[in-house]
Image 1 (cartoon, rainbow, N blue to C red):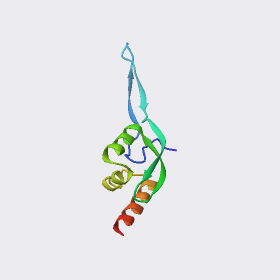
Image 2: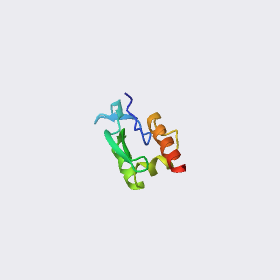
Image 3: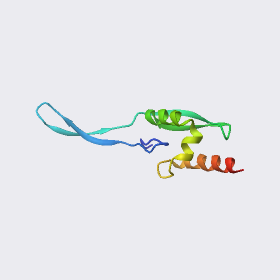
Image 4: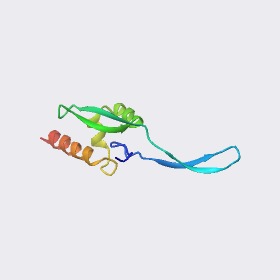
Length: 94
C-alpha cells in the first residue's frame, strides 16, 4: 500500500539527516495518513479513504467531501476518489 493521500496526492518527501559533525544521511519524510470515513451529503452515504491530516483539515475547510472532490483536479485524486467524484457529479446533474 503506497503512502499517498487519496484526496490531496501528498506523498513522501526525501531529505537529509545532518549530524553535529555535518555527516549527511538520507531520510524520508512520510505524510501522517489516517483511515477515515467521510460522509457524502449528495449521495447520502459514507466512503472510506486514507487521508493525510492536513488533507482532512482542508476538506473540512472547503465544506465537506462533495465540495472538495468537485473542485480538485483528477490527477491528484486516487482511483477510488475519482469514482466517487463521478457519482456525485452525475447525481447533481440529474
